[in-house]
Image 1 (cartoon, helix red, strand yellow):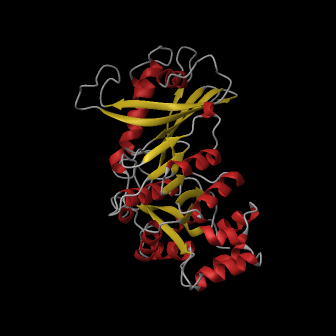
Image 2: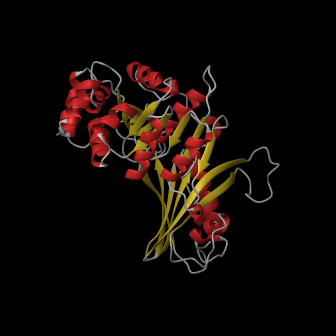
Image 3: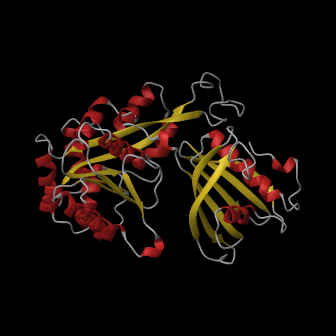
Length: 396
């Protein structure tokens, strides 16, 4: 997918320029979400994250005359003298042209990226997040959720107060779901003021007000949240619950007439609720403010182009030899205002029962576990057991 080495020697000063040009162009064409450029003792290794999985792409010999990461830092306007500390910043890339003076070229397009630099024993490594384009922000009915989950999620989005937590590990689609919720609200029949506090902003939605924390400002998510409440906003998003202070600020807002959204790194709904208790949030306050919890994962779909072949091939135009193309969500949602399971969940929480007991209450209420949903997708041929093991691990 990347082939500058055939044109230039690594000792050529322009080699780094060619590497970055080919690398980012190929990543966009492949639909990669992230690009990793890592220095080794005698080589550079390039990997793309496609459908949530990091795929090795290419390796080039190292040379003192060319440094691809230094080239990226120059494009992002990062100071080269700060070579021994992590750095992070935005990067705008123009694909389809020369990336210089081609702004009027109709064949070019701008892509927003975020560049992270981290020092290693062999030099700086780079991680590039390719942001989704504005028009690619999905609506709720485009997330691929089942009808029951979609109905509960829409009910929560149409509420006037409360707090929805979207749980899952990194790369499980939490931000995509949160953006779809905000887009649904912003495009609703009744206009509401929507304000987000993010670190970083991953996609721009023109119909809402989005704010990105600046490291130089000294603002935290919690302090920004408390200030946002005074902006007459009816709907608030805090991108992630990272600490007790942020959780307290969001919970307080949810109990004072605001509809709040945020994400949290947790494996199950029961685990999410136990995490809130471990943050010393009172159970009665959680019951008053928390409206719902959505836990989700993304499973890769089997490639329908080469699925009939005995083995995926590198020439497959759809899956690039991985055997998978695209992803399908599995999700579990609880509306804690539901009289069927809400009281039972909070009663178990007050009794300090473990997360496994909380999850069992949801299953007894007819809410399928992620594992059950994954098994159905295996039976339907949408995915396979290896992919379910990668995402959910072994059956406990």
